[in-house]
Every structure is written in structure tokens, then in C-alpha cells.
Image (cartoon, rainbow, N blue to C red):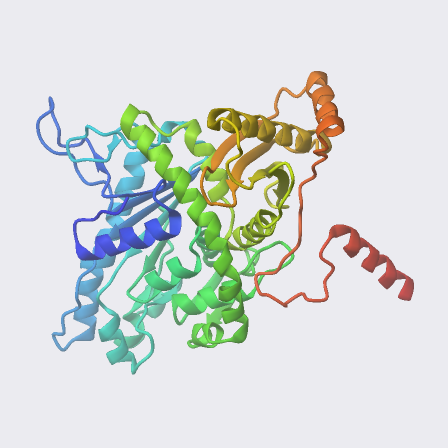
Length: 473
């Protein structure tokens, strides 16, 4: 929900809502500290809080301009204390409060509107700490002779940099801390990070891998955006973007300036951005359903609870996964069938046990609307059960009813913890009588179109290729 009490906070709120969507982003949440017997006002917890499953992202914005007194060392230290240091203190304080008093977080100063997520029910919370520090870019460009103006990143200790020149020590940040790693985004990197990693899955994956990278290596990076370029260009067999050394023998990594500029102007990058355009169909679906959930919570005063789980499963998809499933949806919606209904199913290797099932409809049928709605809901439940029957490893099925007109979308979550012989019998009957023998589609696709043009698209084709290669050897 877009909010914020300062222009920079409002800008941050807008960026986060665009990236993480309205159901999971909240500006200026409050504690009830400072309120006694219903009198007084609560204290601000942080500038923006994102809660998504067990991922909690704490944003603090203490941005200010860097004055020029003629002494770079003095100016940098003053700016650092007012912006980064205060943000870090607020972040750690917010984290501590959420751990100690998870039920005392609210959306308003009077502490009358509870935070919509019950933090007490979240297991294994993973905190991500983000300080937003705007206002130093112009001075950085001036002192460093150009460049983007974003801060340098390092985990080299202050004592090891004690004899370095002022311009080396300034505009550099070490996020490593015994209390927990802190990410700092500035005038340049805030926009880039939230534009390139604009799903909660992609963003949290980047933060986690970056933290692990800094914990197991010595790192000196010219810019955050250059670190991001390496992340986006690289992925090993473990689906890790950064190398990890043994903690007893850390490796040194120097990341030079200019990597982001070269990557973002490449044909590879522009091809990916173009291919991703279709993926925002999925974002629109999530936002449409989210508004229904938010409106219901406002009317009833209830927390989101079970209503949010299905949407969270939708939003857990990365940008690449959203691109793939959106392309599938577009193709299926173009199909015309005599009955007006046709099913589809889609699964992902990294979301083990989760399958999306669709009931594609061509539009309102010439029957009573309520009868039609009930009929398609019954069909959706049958589609979900058939997928569970054919693929026993399926734990949850998220069902969506979609119409070619773009209206009448519905969502249903089906779990199969108590699957029994009666369910098996009904599924076999539906396959035989309704002809809905349904398996989830699972297709390999690269982030970058054409990168693996010669790689077989299905697992069966990949196995055949391996056999041919073995015979050749």
C-alpha cells in the first residue's frame, strides 16, 4: 500500500509495491510503544516492511544530502552517521521488536489496525535488512572522476583500510555485521535492483546469495550494479550465481567498474527484457486477486491467513517462471472448443509438489450465471484431482479459472493430504467419462532467449540425446 511520510519514502513505497505487489508491502508500520491506556501515539517500526512467507524485508530510509566543507573525510563520516548508521540502528531495532513482540505491530499510529500478517505463526523467519541511503551520488561522481555515483561494496575491515586515502575509504560500505548482514541501496542501485529483481523470489534469492558470497569470500566490488551483472550472467550447476569458498580458506574477488554498463547494453540483456514482457500478465492476475483479499480483510477485520496462501504460491514464481506460464496461458486462451471449457496444467522443477491447474473458458455460456459459475468450479476441482492421481508427488494444486474475455477469474487451492481409494476411484471415473486425462506440462527455458537453442526442450528428449552421445563415444 503506497505510503511514506517523505518524498524518498513515498518513492521507495511505490517501487516496492510495483515489484512485490500490494498484498505484501506496507509503509511506515508502527509499534504500540508510547501508548498507555489508549492515550498517545505508537512509534514507527521502519519505513517499509515486506512480509512474504518466511521472508521479512526491513527497509529503512534515512536519506540526506552530503554537505561540502572542503574535507571529504569529515563530509563522508557525517553523511554516513546521518544516513546509513541511523538506518542500520533502526533496522536492528525493528528486527528485535518483531522477534520479541510479534503481536504488537500495527498499520496506524493509534495501534488500532493490526498488521495483517501474524508473525507468531511464521516458522524459520529469514530477515533481510535493507538501508536506503540517497544523496551522495553527485559528490561521489565529483570525487571519483565520474562513474554512476553508486557506493562501493567491500567486506575488508576498517583497520585494513586505515592507511588508505580518504577517497578510497569514502563511498564504500561494509554490510557484514555480527547482528546480521545489511544491504545498502543508493540513488542508482535502488532503481536498478528493484527493476531487475522485481519479483519477491528473485529479490530475496539475490539478497541471500549476496550475503553468503560476502560471508565466504573477501570481496571488493566497484559498484552494486556490477555485482548484480555477475549475478545475472552466471549460474552454476547448483543454481548458485556466486562462487563459495571454504570458510577456512577464503578467496579474494575484485569486481571491476563497468560490468553493468556492458551487460545492460548487450543484445543478450535486451532479448531477455523483451521476452519478459508477457510475464506481467501473471503480475496482473496476482494484483487482481490481491485486491479482493484486501477488501475482504478491510470489511471483516480479519487477517489474511488462508486467503493469502494461494496468492503467495502464485507470487513465489520467479520472473522466468512467470514468463513461461504466461506464454502457456496465452496459447491456451486462443484455443476454441465445442464445450467452452478446456483444462491445462503447469508445474515447475523448483516448486516440488506444486502444480498450477487452469480451467480455460471462452466466455459466459447460455445458461443461468450461477449455474455456470458452479459448474466451472466443480470442473476445476476435478482437474486438480486428476493431476494428483496421475502425479502422486503432487502436494498442492493451485487452480485458476480464466476466461478469454479477461473477466470472471477465480482462484482455488486444493491440498491432498488425505488422498484415499475413494478419490482414486472418482479420478479414474472423471478421466473415463469426461476425458480430462491431465498431466502437468514442464518445459525447460533459459533466462536468455536462444542461449540454449540446441538443448532438447523435454526431459525425454534430453535422455535420448545423452544416449546418442554415449554411443558416439
